[in-house]
Length: 174
Length: 318
Ligand SMILES: [Zn+2]
Image (cartoon, rainbow over all chains, first blue to last red; front, top):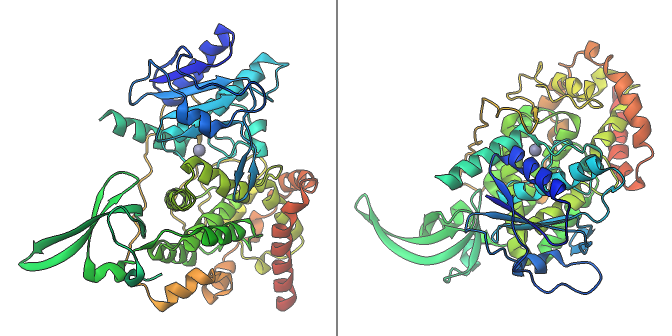
């Protein structure tokens, strides 16, 4: 089960569509869950995604559930050995938790907004299942800061990633 | 980095080539086939699998310590450096990648990842190489994460921030390169038929199989719509022969990436190219190349290096 926790309010229709996109991508159920076990967030400024995911939890989540937090707050860029990496989403695999932000998404067009948000969520849930970044420019597992990720907006997986995720999900169930 | 200098105390993290980061559990005495031997017991961090290695064979199998911060910094320099392009001869490429994976050095794995990423700019990877890319990437990600004490997802982002810099479309770089080379005779280029077929579809990113005269094994990837049925055939894991003998040749290969493009075999492969294949590629390439020329200047060294290489080849042949 994928638990979708919206930190700030998201219209119910958008939450439902986001759940539907995740279900379509991975074939496992996705349900909204209450934001009941969140750490205290800074009053302003970007959220440190790693620190947040280490502490945040969802009371309804079972051990093998994946939890996706959605926020409208920006996520802080991460200082990594290859540079300051912009962070639109992040996942911590051992914890089974990911966060995506709507900050910076095109909000003039609700359809585009939702596709881009869904693509980020599909990306991070894939990583929670142990998938790696993909070489296919149209795949949701393509590096998210790279141009094709934002221009090809469909939240799809390529055949390779789809097979990999099927395999991982099957192994987790057995 | 020899086994003799390694710390094998309980809880120490080590790298077992082709298996990844492992944690030392301890030493165990076992009798196998009437022979008593002491084994080092390791647990793979990836899947908690147990690995037993006879103490006498530790050096042969290449168990080593996790790379340190200095080596990781060097590794990122290697990943960010302009690449000279992939080896287009699949036989030498497979051999070289197999050797590097068996060797298991962190720089060797980075080479495999970088070279296959560069190859995928030109054509979709055959399924076996796609699996190899994923395996090499997995080993690299887990070692970087272990070395720096960061989440694996951050380690992977760091790798790809170097390989896929923001604002640069890798496939457009490939199109730019092919456009620059368009004036050269096919006989001067190391382009095999599979490559040229891939180039035909760079703009449309057709994921069809690029197999051609090279008889390269594999198939391209199809993008599955989220509501499509799952593909019928499952990719099989590439089983690399992890031969323990780490020869001096392999050690040299890890220090200096072996580009086999200039080997006689690679040259022979180049003669197999079919000029007729090239014509339909041009209109698509031009359109993409125009856009590519407006991308970041950081993108250009790789294409320029390759164009220079091809130009010097042309000079030699004329
Ligand atoms: Zn993919």
